[in-house]
Image 1 (tube, one colour):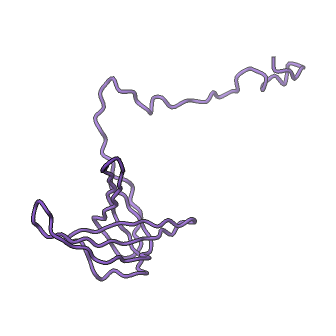
Image 2: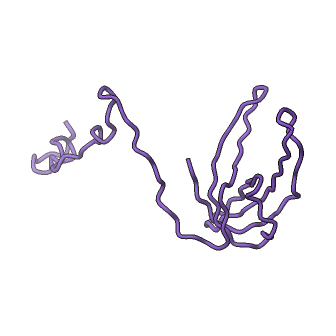
Image 3: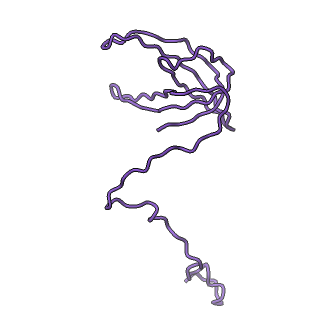
Length: 138
């Protein structure tokens, strides 16, 4: 799932780098904290990996990021990563989510078919007994 988030960079953390234990390849990671422009602003910690790192981003920059969110379990605890795969300066017009329709088996229930419908006229009962002469609900 791709998520688009807009806001202002409020923190640029130090660049991390190292060598993978199993692969022996070098890696680098840049982490940022972004604050959303909502009525109740949220701070979001995210990372950019490898060649996608652009060292010219600074605190105060208005950015739009596209991220993948993934969680993993380690020793009974869950950790969530927010990894940006694209980052642009400025606020970009939001895009509608690009959801691919999934093939559903014929036996799978259709949620659209299960939408409740409201009757055009109120049901007969205590709320609509104004013409019965009494106001008792039974």
